[in-house]
Image 1 (cartoon, rainbow, N blue to C red):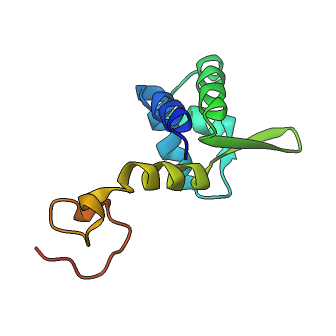
Image 2 (image 1 turned 180 degrees about the horizontal axis):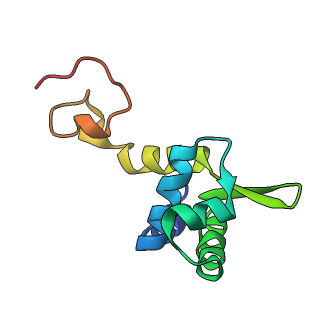
Length: 113
């Protein structure tokens, strides 16, 4: 992931409503959910929701598709994973994980406590 893309993704998530929307979509999984349901769960009015979804879309954090008369939004898991990899690529200076960075590591083997 390029720095510019990482900054765009982090900027999109650095707002209360957008972070709440994104977390709801992550919980929904790859199937996503309609905008109306997102609005209902997050208590964000539809006009504001549209603005926030647009910002998340421009940062490639969410994608949308039409199903009949509904627009279904879903988290873009590949962008999320690329962002996490970008943020942790130099974890522990390239050495095997130690206790200080264990939560950031992608391996979930038995970790020292």
